[in-house]
Image (cartoon, rainbow, N blue to C red; front, side, top):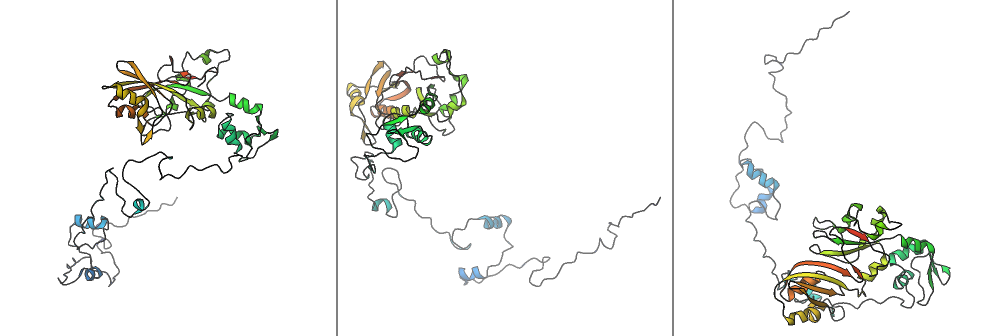
Length: 381
């Protein structure tokens, strides 16, 4: 057996290698690092441009000054120049908006003041575009007008070959038909339509109707089996409808109910119902109970019923009456954003609570807060 003995190399200070200084290459273009640099002295008559050309790093500055020079944002001036005066902030007009500075809005006829949103009476609006061929509308649009389904559903039915026009199957999107054409749908389309759902929810405060915003959850998160009303008639039917996750696909609110309001909110997969409730020509009544604070004269009550305007547009006639000593009953046929709250503000009332209790022929009834039920087959909006 052979043994090999390895001796360590000497590392103490007595070693000749340890005392030997490291070798550095001499470069005449670099300064000697062992000698402090001399400060650069510039003549007082030297201009800023000349100093910029012959500028050398000033190593006499302290560390904080060097850090600020290294990280500063360039403002268009040299280091030794005086700071440039800041430009004056733009002035605000009477509405609190910046006044146009390059002529864009003024050149296009911008006028400061209340803006008229009425397309019919405001000359700044272009006329509403007319259909390219009103006598031959698109098939999907004609089906929606006749109440078969929504335009989105009509496109799906056409693609699946479920639509006949004058006895001929039409499966091409964008096809146009005469207004007197006979339109038929197959049994498959009717079965597909019977599987879609409409849900009635008693929305609590703190939930938004549509998409999530500002950290608040949408009302659709409440639609799950744990929140279904236990007294829902369809839950105790001979053939009860069991909740399926497919019910959430395409389920959307048919109308708004703001975050501070409670009551009846409709969520549906049925495009016909959505069009009926929130279409441009919808006249479905919506009833609210509004708890208010303040004094209301007879003249102001008449204004709530007939004479108010919002954003320069006159509101449709409403039905407003006292429900009790601190609660008003509103019946509206339109749904402008925060309409009831803004109407009350115009007559000096403060809204303390708002609850929707009816849409068309469908009432909230005994549905508890935060729970939901299916729309019953006999119910109609």
